[in-house]
Length: 171
Image 1 (tube, rainbow, N blue to C red):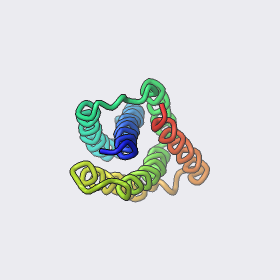
Image 2: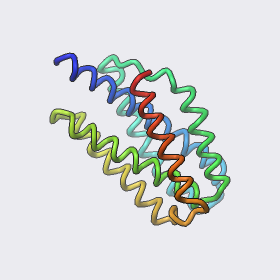
Image 3: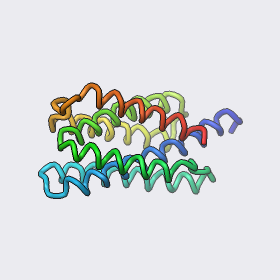
């Protein structure tokens, strides 16, 4: 494999691992606050899918000897805090968080898919992309867009997510 492809592969695995880890942290924070609310079942289902994605990227990290981002402890704190904060704002805000993040992740995965050669990694990222976009639709069905200050909240979360992707690629 040439150096550019290898660098891209390492970067893709590192950033995807970080993103799935961050998603689990967000859902963990939301579960803590919303544990007695009806929306908890959807959060748990989405979190379970994210855990499967993380398991896959944990395997890829070992298989390809990829160094995880050193920012995982930061993503733990920020992800859990974001989950708690949006959940405190209510179920709609928690779903607005999911909708915003999954939109960015869907775009991110589509970009990777367009650059990857056919194979098992591309196939799995395509599957994960579909699942992430399904999470976005679930969030919208649960009134994400009716959260107080939805457009501002969504914009802030999308910017944070894009920043996390950028930094996780590098460090």
